[in-house]
Image (cartoon, rainbow, N blue to C red; front, side, top):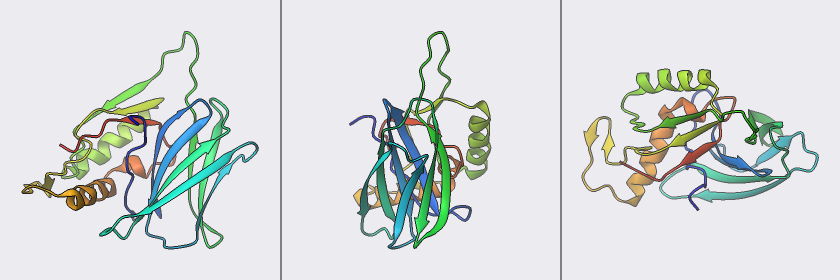
Length: 193
């Protein structure tokens, strides 16, 4: 479906996982989490009352990362939640999120984002700090979310599916969007440049 979360990717120096929150509507949140922690990873959402978690894990060769698709149901509109990631009983990451709340006569604050070229790391880091500071209710990634045809500013000849997948992971390593403590719901279109 058009509303599924983007593939999140890669482990950073700051956190053990990379996370993106997809659309969080009607009591349901979709998240994508990537890690290189190996086996024994569990997910919990707090507060837990009435909340149900479905996990779908994927490992895709040649990647060494594991990608979890997480569907959380039973959420209350606008309530604050915390996603905790554990490995062998030890908490390795924690993020905050909420579902979108639509209120009559209150505008929804959105940020439109495109052209996320990981070659420009300094600009990206500055940009994501500014976006977070604006406190948008939702992000719309409207194109060129990954530059799959370039690496390090150099054009790649006819990247195959494995290279496109790898470029998604590499790009996510460079973007602070996937490292932020407070997750912002993301609506995206698949567009690899």
